[in-house]
Image (cartoon, rainbow, N blue to C red; front, side):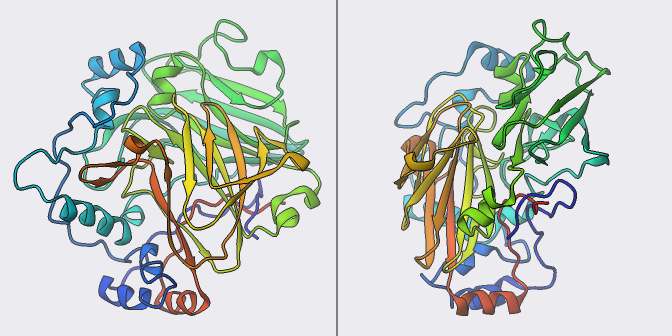
Length: 414
């Protein structure tokens, strides 16, 4: 299984393979269970631009809650889109706009592999090893970030130049030393959400530390005592800074290998799924549909998904075709309280781990079920992706064609 290893991380998403034509890839994809399942793996050369682009933003039928004053003021000051406008679906009120054609075009972009044309997300950061200490060095940067391949980049923030920040992974009991250098023009602070840390390392400016000033660095050091799915993010002007991308996943594997998901459930994939809903609209791992990467699994595989909500709204995640077994909340195993569902509400700050047995071949929609977060009059957008379950014949055909895997998987565990 691809489980967590603080010492030998593997890539999160694999770039498309040069030289494989989209036409040839689509032929191979026809063998997949459900017909279109394999196609969603992505064409290995960028597809031609579809015959449409996003129309100017218009208010959705059901308006989302207003943005916080801090986020709205920051957007106004920077010239960025407001929170409300950023996730308004394209309007179909303009005469001669074809609803079906527009909805089909955005699906074509997704099935054509738009996610693979953008930089990978949740790439693990390899730490330096000093005895039992894992040393992570990160910068805090102003960045240009692409929500999808057609929209202009947004003015965002990131750790090590990316949003979400690099995936940090350790094993229970290891000492973490995380050094953050602030390259912003504003002060900040970093909180390891869900970890039991010394008060001086809690990352809340003016309570446990002074703000990290522009050009300065701060070192957080603590023992990873709480295993499970956790996060790190800004805790200073946080509505604005987290909303603009200062967030990332922090995974602590249990000390005992038998308690890890590969051993406990036979999971072959362990996937990080971070939602946000401020800058750029409704996003999964910093991307909006159709640039969200599908999860690709083989028929019969078991996978784990770690939902993390870094936004300001609750999101009920709904998987078509198969149930989810909910096994942990905020890093704590549910044990006998584990339950099965097909829709799981994840509140801001929460982390929920689910196990999915991929026993139904095909391309299955996977989305937030607050409908204006996922679909408008011109098709799907925002918090939408798919679980692609390939039967054996499709998997063999696609592997022979050199089709890329592009799930968001945490590295192997040591």
